[in-house]
Every structure is written in C-alpha cells, then in structure tokens.
Length: 173
Image (cartoon, rainbow, N blue to C red):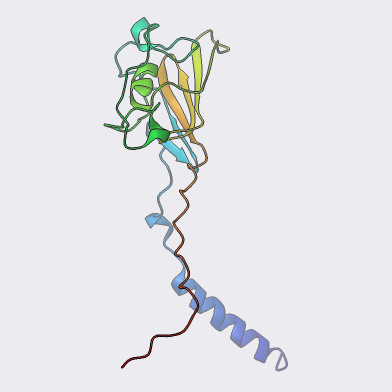
C-alpha cells in the first residue's frame, strides 16, 4: 500500500481539481426539437409549422427558374460587370420564402430540378453556382426548407507593389 501512495495521491488530486472545473450540465443548451429552424453546419433546415399563407401558382418557378414565365427583371450592376446577371440584394434569403421570392432576391438560378416527392408534393432544387450567395436551395410545396452554402466566390487578386528600381542611392548634400 505504501508503494502505491505516490501514484494514488496525484491521481486523486487531479480528479478533485477536474471535478471543480467541470461544466454544470443544467447550463448547457441543446437544440430544441420544438423550434422551427435548425442549423447543422453548412445546412439550415426548417420544420413545417403550417402558419404561412398558401402558395399559389404565381409563387412557383418554371424549369428555367423564371416566375410565371416572365423574363428576369433588368438590374443595373454597372459597377461590377461580374454581377450583371445578379440583382442587388435588398434583403436576405430566409427559410419559408417562396420559390419566386428567392428568385427575385438572388436572380435566375443556374440549375433547376422540379419533381414530386414520395408523398406527391412538389419539390424543387435551385442551384446558384455564381453570384453573391452561391449554394443549393431546396423547396417543398413551394417554400424554402433548406439552404446549403456553396463555395465562396474567389477573392480578387490584390495589386502587387512594384519593387523600387535598383541603382545608386541619392546622396544628401
């Protein structure tokens, strides 16, 4: 027993100190299953709460990503020609928005997939590969239910400073 004492005492002391610094489990918060929105890393998911107005045919996009067959609205992005096909973002994109609300906010998507799910409800997946908010936007019943962020747009290269010309140093007179 005496030989084990040098090993047992530091171990007991370490356990005592660790117990004092352990977090209190009652203070920890886990996501509530009752909430309507849940964020998991890059993906935001919303549960259907049934409180929004009904989605009409005017709220749905066609296979080209246009609302009601209308041409996309002209937007002046003359300051940045790379964004000339994207509208200016007056507001953000939020879960539960209709398909056309997202298109009016982000512009025409680069890819649209529309098909019924296993319950026969309309599902749409709109993919934006460029623009201000690239990503995959998933809709069920005409409402946005999940957003998966795409890769961030590449940063513009910074202008490099020209090295000073090599030569004779000026002498102070």
